Structures are given as structure tokens and as C-alpha cells.
Amino acid sequence: MKTLISIALLMLSPIMVNASPNGQQLFENNCSVCHGTKGGGGVGIPLALPSFINSVSDNYLRKTIRYGRPGRVMPSFNNLSDDEILSIVNYMRTWTGKKGKTFSKHNITGNPQAGGKLFNKLCISCHGVGGIGGAGTGVTFSRPRNSPIIAPSLNNPGFLSSAEDEFIKETLVNGRAGTPMISYKQFGLSDQDINNLVSYIRGFEAGPYPFKSYDTESAVIKVDSPYSIEETINNVKDAIIGKNFKLIRVQELNQGLVEAGKENKKSYIIYFCNFNFLNKALAIDPRVGMFLPCRVTVIEQNGKVSIISTNPLKLASLFNNHELSEACKEMHTIYSELLEEASL
Amino acid sequence: MKFPTAISRLAGLFILLCVSFNSYADDLIMMRVKQSFPETMTSLQIAIKKAGYTISRVQRVDIGLTKSGFKTDKYRVVFFGKAEEVETLLNQYPDLAAFLPLKISIFAENNDTILVSNNPIILQRYFKQIPEHYFTRWEKDVQKIFSLASIED
Image 1 (tube, rainbow over the protein chains, first blue to last red):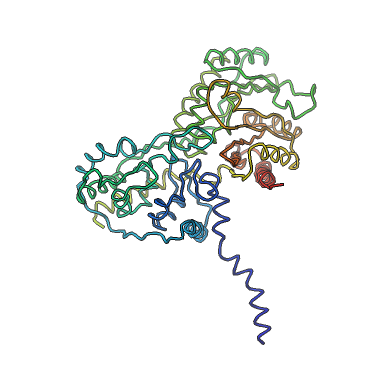
Image 2: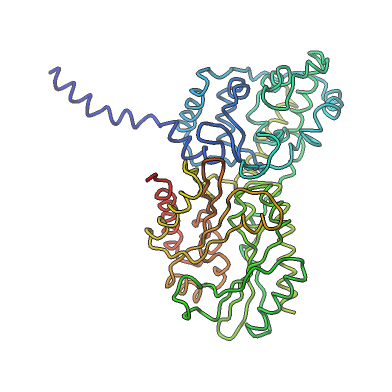
């Protein structure tokens, strides 16, 4: 009988192991690409920083993974179950071996007007006007950087939904060692002053959040050209140079995919770049290389010539990066004007 | 919870739900490879070929930036596709040309290398008239390429 029970338990054990998600594996699959293999940071913040990981609640981490930070690179992980998220959080706790803090959901009462004055005096230089956050979301160690972190966006709905008032207060009181965030006690603030600041930050919830999504845009920008394919290509080249971009190359779309000499002469890609703009875009988000270099495609089909480009605004919506969306707005204008000029 | 605070909390949650619906983690396929850039670049090219694709071009983004006086670590974009498939799709759905050939960005981050691609399945949202099987297969293939590229020798 004992043997039967042992066999039954042995048969069950793999199921039981599989039933508990592997937090480390999940972290490596979903988080490490931005936050580093052991939370050392990269495109994302260094989560393993003891002054961060030891001062946040499990609730804060769970909600942050679930909701993300709209417009600030960190996406919402809707693809993960609650158990999987909990496993990731438990794995993150192994970095320092300490349990997460527990904060009450009790709201701190303060004077938001007085807090606003303090915010504009002491916080605005890092956290920006209205708590919008530091510039340069999505920096990476592949680019020059001054700090491993960027001041968080305090008006971000993802942050406000995740952070308890007591957590915000504790951060103000203790600061965050290893980052530019110092203890606000050093400014001589009283307990009431700090409550006023918390109350002001909490008040961002009522205000509008200035992140605009362009997901409803069309995927491509397209115009028809009244010219031949050769003339259209020349027009595009002239328009590119006219916009202070450097022409990189013109090639058949399937060049390199087919044997040399057998390329399709009815579809061409024209690559171009402005390295100053590119450098700025990569500093905003290093993943932007995915739609680089700039390109326009010229196609002839059934005697009709069309000029097509991707719509940078549409692609920007994939990156969840407000700053990048703004840069893509500029690129959208450039592409639209370029296509129009080339087809006039 | 005081009444105005409760209202403000609900408003915050509403805004969150409104603005975050289209920023899903799986819109991009990304991977951190614990290998240096040159090794990963070689693995990536082998993986693309193993998955049945031809590399049409490697854009050396870092070279252009460095020549223009900007500092950057290694950064390349690898273009790839299947000749017949590209030809068929171009003839039937010319607007898709803007997204072809497929591509993967690869860049160094200290001793690691990062691979990034848009998830080809998003193209299904953009081009609803194109049969879904193209995009689902591309998604699987890109995931396979990333896995193969991350396996250490």
C-alpha cells in the first residue's frame, strides 16, 4: 500500500512542480531584456537596487507588472496570470533575501496646495512639471548615460495605482540610496510638509494624463505618383536631400533575397537617414532601430506607381514611449511631406 | 477613504484602463542574450538561415552614427525574408511592402546583446485582408530564431 502511495505521489510530483510557475524563468523571459538578468538595469530601471527592492511592497510590484507605466516604456503584462506575476515578485525577493514592506491603504491627509508649492521648489527639477518624470525614457547602457535611473513619472496612472500613500511618504523620508533621490528630511521638512507633498502627488490622479496613443492611425502612408517609376525614384531622392537627410541607397526590394540580376524592377526601397535625428531617437528608446533606417518604398503595379512608407505614429504605439511618440510625430510630418513633394 | 479621494482613485483607474489597453508586452519580441555582440550576431545569422530565410542585408547603424561623431555601442539591423513569399505578397498586397523584408535589431549592452523585433502578429491588426497564417508563422519563426540565437555554443 505504501509503495502504491509512493508511486502515486511520484506521479503527481511533476504536476505539482509545474503548477507553481518558475519565477526566475518568467523574469528571464519577460523582464530581463530591459531590467538585466538579475535586475541590474538596462533599458529599464535597476530593480535589484537594495534601496528600491527592499522598500517596495509586493502589491506595488504586482500592480506595476500588471498595469505597466503608460507612455513610459514599461508595458502592461496582460499576458501573465496572477500566479505568474506573484512568482516573479517572489523571485525578485531572493535578490536581497528580504520580504517586501507592507503599507496600509490608508490615505494620508495633507494640504495639496501647500504640497504643490514644495513640489515646485524641491521636486520639479527631477520629476518635471506636474510630475511628468525625467526625460529620456528607455536609456540603455549601449548609449552614454549619466545615471542608471530616470526620475519616475509621478503623475503616471500606473504609478498612482500601484503606490500606496505610505510608500510615497517613506520614499520622501528615507530617499533612495544609490540614486539622486535624497531624504527630504535633509531639506528640513516637517512631517506635515511631507504629508502635504504626498497629498499633492496623490492629487495627480484627478488630472489629465498627457499620453496620447496613435493606435488608430493607418499602418502606412501612401500616395499615387503620376510619374514613371524611375522619375518617381528621382523625385523621392530630391525630396530626401531637400529635407536635409542623407541618401543611403536605392535598391530593389528583393535585392539579396534573389540571385543577382533577377531582382524585381518594379519595387524599390530608398533608404535615407539624418544621423542627428537618429542619435536623438536612439537616446529616447534604443529599440527604435526596429524601424530604421528611414525608408520609402516605390512600387509599380498594373502601370500605376505608388510611394509607400510605414506610418511612424502607428509604429510608435508599439513602444509605449510618450517621448518616442512625439519624435515619431515629427517623422510622420517629414514622411507625409516627402511623399507629397515626390508625387507633385 | 474620503469621498473625493475615492472619486479621484476611480478616475485614475479609468484613465489607466483607457491609456494602457494598447501597450501590450507582446507587441514586441525581445530577448537578452548572455553572449557578446559578435558571438550573438553570428548565432543570429545562422539561426535565420536555419529557420529557412535568406538574409538580404545587414544595416550597420553604429558605423553611420560613429562616422557622424556620435558615440554608440554595436548596433545593427538584419533584414531577411523568403524570396517567393515576398514576391507573392507584394503582388497581392502592395501596401505590405513597407514592412518587407522582415527585420531584427541587434545591439550590445555591456557583455550582453539585445534582440528586438516587432511581433509580426501585429501586422494582422494592420492588414486584416491578408491571411493570418503568414503572420502567425512569422511570429513563431521570429521566436524560434531568437531561441536559436541565444543558445550558447
